[in-house]
Length: 83
Image (tube, rainbow, N blue to C red):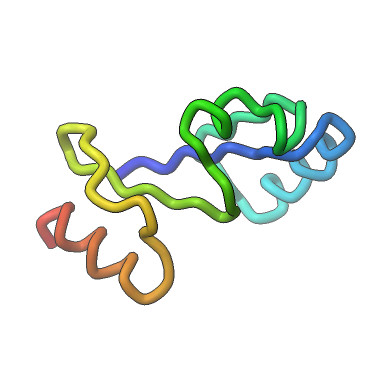
């Protein structure tokens, strides 16, 4: 399983975001363009309209759920990891 984070804050949040990630031991890749929500290239490309947005991909890289959050997230992760 792999986690990738995408921060949609503007440049003024860079230091705060880095500190938050460090404090919480976040060690997965984190993308920070620093242009803010409205003009972030990934947000526009993937039509992200709300946060958090969680997508679950299978082992072939196919999106199997684009609203993977809350109580349904853990069972889906178990299913696709074969647990």
